[in-house]
Image 1 (cartoon, each protein chain N blue to C red):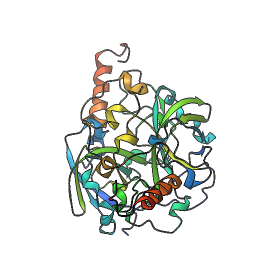
Image 2 (image 1 turned 90 degrees about the horizontal axis):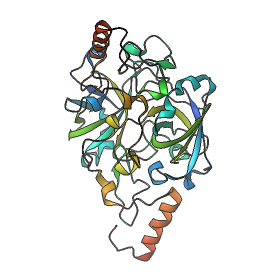
Image 3 (image 1 turned 90 degrees about the vertical axis):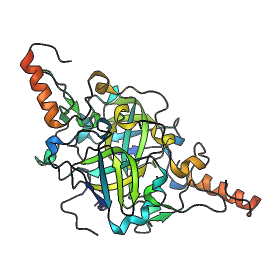
Image 4 (image 1 turned 120 degrees about the vertical axis):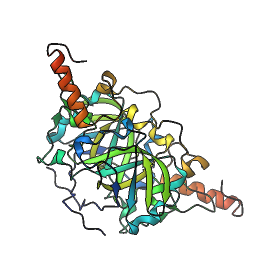
Length: 188
Length: 188
């Protein structure tokens, strides 16, 4: 690897408190689980940084997925079959063309809706984080910066079902069902 | 600070090549500079991770702003006047309610439009990165995940002009002009 020219160690700014305690039962994307609520407990040292955030409806939570069992096998493979790919002939994709958690740098990006900010606690809806997930940044959603100029092509996501509330376990079950039904059927 | 329970060291996956070489003349947001083009040189070790990315129109570049002179003064203050705030009475905001580069963890998030992927080089439009910026993740833009369910409130951004191509230098000049014109005038 290219030598990193400086320290790039991260600081935790807070921790997610959600009702999800097992990764296989945790929704894979906040955008597919927009009604479930959870909270972010911001560390006291950083609470002053929240000033003004209550005027935004949506924020990006940048999370550190390093504790994930999903990435415990060492370095993430560069080509993976994403959870959301199912069926008998799932497509293998480059990790940078997926939103999967096993990445070179295990950084997650979740768009969540702010419900309330009470002292050091941000309550939000849109949950794809297991309880205890470390948050490394919060950024306000700004339409002028974060909305594409036109309706964009979204690669393989345009060709698949995106089931609401999908979890690794539910997606695995769905794949098995399809395989069980007719393994010669082409993938849908 | 809370002890970090594990290694959180980052790996560079590539480097931005842009025509911007001085931070004060580098646009502050890719969304305000959507026509300028630049490229991302992905390190050879990670090129396999790009498979399938050419089918997406937009990607998020997650960048490391640690080399920025903007953050050379040590730890970022938790309340700051953002570059985009001008006028005689600029508003001080919590860092997590801004998109400024001096953050607890100096992580940047830029939505860019993919023009072409040629081997290890991604050409894109939407430039807010100085030449040499380190990229730590690439994620495809997925409308189902990244678009709010409704047109959101965007806090103080809703109350200001967002000038196209704005740079720290141009914004500073604008503030000085306003002050010069009539320092008693309320901020616009």
